[in-house]
Length: 332
Image (tube, rainbow, N blue to C red):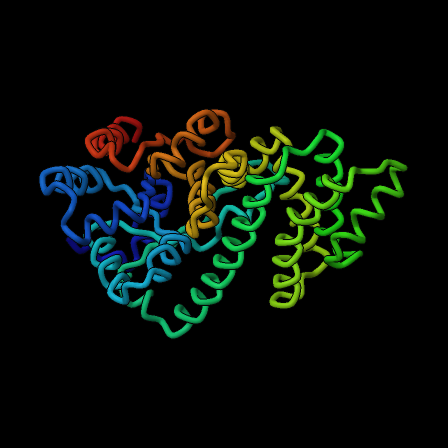
């Protein structure tokens, strides 16, 4: 189904406040491949159309799809998205507007009629390739650090305190990425010594992240403002109050932390992108995710101070998805 979205904002200035639906990439690919029940799909599209609702598409959807090995994913994904009559891409993302400093802010959306052309723009491929490289680097660092946590004894409270201090110093950048040197500095500063085993474990755990930061610095030459934001994000990882001023990133960090605490879980390459998907949820009305992400996010989704109160569903709950989207008509 196609809709002329040209001029929709001029004709209906408040249209970007229509209800928003954020579907997991897996559902969109199921639609493209005909794996979604035809009856349910028809009901879903009807619910999205009866009273207009936006299908929200993010950069992370595109990264999800275009970083896969199947070269046909781009066209399949575009075909699925273009079945939805009202579709908008995120122009300003949660991490760009958070933390809020002067009250709640909203992500910025732009209606897009020719979605396939957007994916085919010359700048899209190199940009997404750069993101895919960063995603791979995150996956390698996470897997390496998790392997240490899986095999080494748990750190003592003192050891965890030193980990936090070292991470802050790494984020600030003033001692570079010399993990042994940073840890030794903090031991001297605190006038406390770690056991040889715990010191070795901390160094092994932090070295992959130091390498990731080194790659980040080489690629992006971060400014002082960039470092301040990195440090703020790190601090917010431990601060439940961040749900009030950074609702999207709060969910992303809670998802990452939930997976990180499960030392027996093998990190997936998609973890970093899945975390960013979660950051959009406080800015939409209905969202879906896989079962693993759902179990981590369900305890937190109702506590964030987003500008919307999302209904979060598992990807497999398709009947519930249709009903949730249809129920948005009652609030319009």
